[in-house]
Length: 200
Image (tube, rainbow, N blue to C red; front, side, top):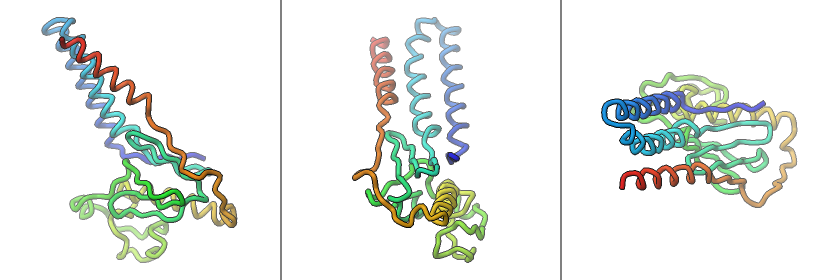
């Protein structure tokens, strides 16, 4: 089973930006000319693409194979045998046999968010703090982006270890599997080029 965690507000923000961009383009065409709308369209599309790539697409995905961190410019896959530790002090950070990797979509709450967060005795909090609700920091609470992602990873990690699949961990790769978001970058460059070309 594959499960993903991403902030809900990222999707809302992207929909709002996309709606505003479409409205601006149409308003420009109706109020001025469709030639002006055509010149504005690439910039509105670029704005929407940037918002989607920054706030909608990033997520943390957990499967029986491992953890996938979908960030802005790249996706990093960490197999379970490579995972060593989970931390949420500033954002979700995984310490692995390949190094440390941070999840863009799972940031820790700020001072205001920490005050508003509800205290919880989640059994999937930090291993050293389980069963001690007062000691759990805000970044590990289930209602924070970092905490919800960390809890999802810990739950699956515990199940896989309990099943004995990590009794003799072996790495199949020397480095983490990293996929760069080339298509998104090319689309951004294309829209930028079209916008500059039509502005001349």
